[in-house]
Length: 64
Image: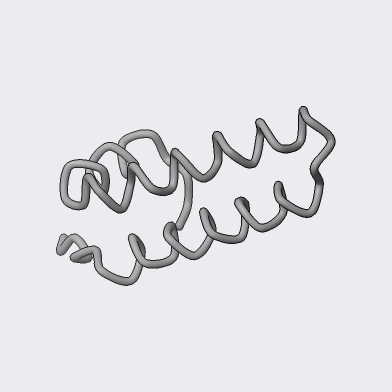
């Protein structure tokens, strides 16, 4: 999923729980990194990446 602000806002509106999970896991990854827990940070980042992938897969593609 590309990170275009407009696209992210649409995905967040369509799938608020999944988008919240992405944001939450990215925040945890940042917190773990600051605490020096790099293994936990990597796990949280991978979880965020998986959730973001689900957003891309579940999204309805726009028709032009």
